[in-house]
Image (cartoon, rainbow, N blue to C red):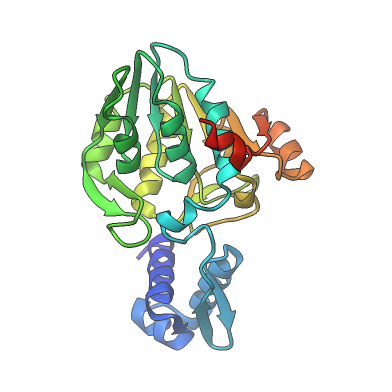
Length: 271
């Protein structure tokens, strides 16, 4: 078993059982206890678990791995402003790709009044926002249906796997708008779900421009599934909570950073 698959299964075991021991994992994966210690230390650095004497325990749920229904109620003012800035980049006649996630779902809402627009997506939430818009043509990828977080009825439901990936290869979007569970300049963008990670990777490969939509809380976080280095990004749209250090680090790599002011609830209510 390759290391990446072992890390994935260890993370799943911790989330499922709440705690694991080094001896148990060593026996289960037929590797040395020293190897398991290194695996646990790596996952701890990524924030997936907390190391304990002789093993590890699950860390408390944060906004990154909370169910979609919870996450979409967090940092709403920031996500709304980010979405509106992203929507302003979309021109008439474009073909764009929209990833999954709460901030990208906000972008879908902001695109409802666009005309002559084609959207490719694997996200049920994006499809539900746009399927009845007269000026928007939506292409769904098809594929295996997964609730990427939370219960299926309340999760971030997406289509992943070989069918979804093959569909994406047929398109060449002018822009791909992605969300992320975490981003650092050293590790790049990261995600909490391996099948969706592959979809994200494909979007970075087939699109002319790659634009990351993320609120400031995702900076400095590393999840266990690495999507791509930051160098694949053309632009990052975020809120004014981003640190000067993170902004400068991205700009030093040639990435345009657009910083927006959160939109107040009063202004949102006027829309």
